Image (cartoon, rainbow, N blue to C red):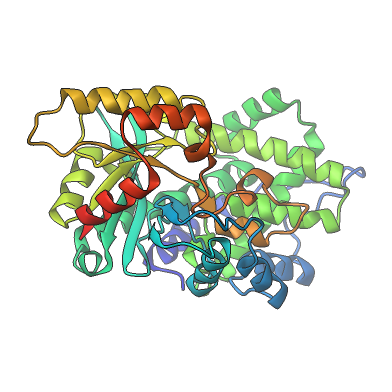
Amino acid sequence: MAGPYIYGMINKIENTNQQDTGGCREKSKTGKINVPHTGENIEEWEEKMFLRVISPLLSKEQENRIITPAYISGLQQDVLAVHWHPEHIPMELIGQRIKNSFPDARNSLIIPTQHNSLMEFNGFAGVEIDCFSPEFDRKVQLLIHFTAEKAAGAEKIRVMAEHTFKYRSRQLFDILHALAGDKMDDSIKKAETATAAEREIEEFVGAYSCKILRLIESHAASINNIFLKNKLIRDYFEELKGVYDGHIIDMAQVFIKSVKELVKASFSTGYFYKTRDVISQARESGAGIVVPHPEQFWPILLADYDVDGYEVWNPQSRQFTEFLIGAVAKMNGNKKSSKRPLLIFMGDDTHMGEKIRNASVIDRDKASREIGMQPAWDDPDIMAALKTVKASRERVIDEYRQRLL
């Protein structure tokens, strides 16, 4: 159900400026795309399309796709998965998929890490939380892991995550306002230049962005917060391929992406807690902490944060695995003997929601990821580097589990 923040956002739309929803650019039809006039009522089919995009319900066919893995690893007995996102997929279906993926598993540590939302699975709980590191002026991410018992008492971390969760919804509204209103014309103009978008594409995107704002307002009380993020815009426009020419929608998506990046670049860091404060509260709650894909914000390697380890491989961060293994080994060599050694992790970064999307809108890279499958552990060159630091799935599972208990 929608939380208080969503009601607050809707109130902001209604009260701060009539241009936010009612003041969307009035567009005339160009004749080429047949741009819908923003003053028109929302058509029934447009509303049904929106409800389909935000529906958490799965069809029987989608449920079967979840429990049927694309790959089965009959030989892998150690399953480590501490960086993956359930999204809106039921945990019982995810659990069945994991069992089917690893029929001979004997030793496992599997913890979900939804973005800024604490979730539990089989006695453990986790969250991937966005933070801000003023030392090097960069937004970073942390994986926070607990036993379910400790997570139940981690109220401060829960509040931090819930507050930070709001930024994704805030970005959604900022992007929709930029596309549909007059407040951020400079961003629109920059995006037009960057993509060479034709005026009619801007009109088309603006009209439907205005409709999306109105649809969110109409259904605020029933929208699950998890759908109120930037992906909603992409998903809704992809659904329009059943109505408009696919080439038009593809051009619209390029334009939307450019505006999104411009809005994100100027987004306030006020939604994020400082990294050291999050770490302090996590430790106070008895949590473990892992830095995911550090190559994306590499100064974190120099920050000397109190963490349990670093992720050296990830499907979207795989360039410097051997270098990162060596960096962790060097940091361990410089640590005082009283400090626990840093552990080496690999993350599959699976997004379960991608596995039920239609072929026309699926992100094939994300959809190909599987919970617990990190092929770098078995890469000959990487295995040689891991051997020098005595790292393996089995050792990391056993050591990290002990730290969490």
